[in-house]
Image 1: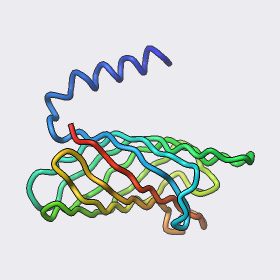
Image 2 (image 1 turned 45 degrees about the vertical axis):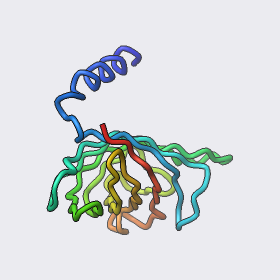
Image 3 (image 1 turned 90 degrees about the vertical axis):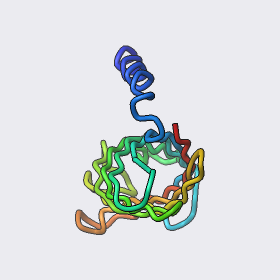
Image 4 (image 1 turned 60 degrees about the vertical axis):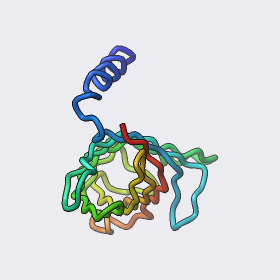
Length: 150
């Protein structure tokens, strides 16, 4: 496992010059129903955020939740979204696959909605993750995040 993580880190560092301003790294707080509790998220994303119009966004990450119960609320995820850029504002929707079902995300396949604002060195964004009750009722997850652009 350590060797695989080191290999991924090495590939990431080698690819940074290729993707220039298109690689984003971020994190934030996690909550349900607009109450941000003791959860955090961290992720890496690829998105060409220069110019206006539609662009793809690919994101992988992890959501950790610190709770005092036996419920599993943490999961890894990968998503692909269509993002519309309008000056510094952006919004979009996409699909997501999670590594394991949780109390808040009750199916492996989810939708992800993103709204944000780009700065020259990063962005602040809000993301909502839910299955839209297509795979059974779930609470969904809200993420309030800041990302750095490399």
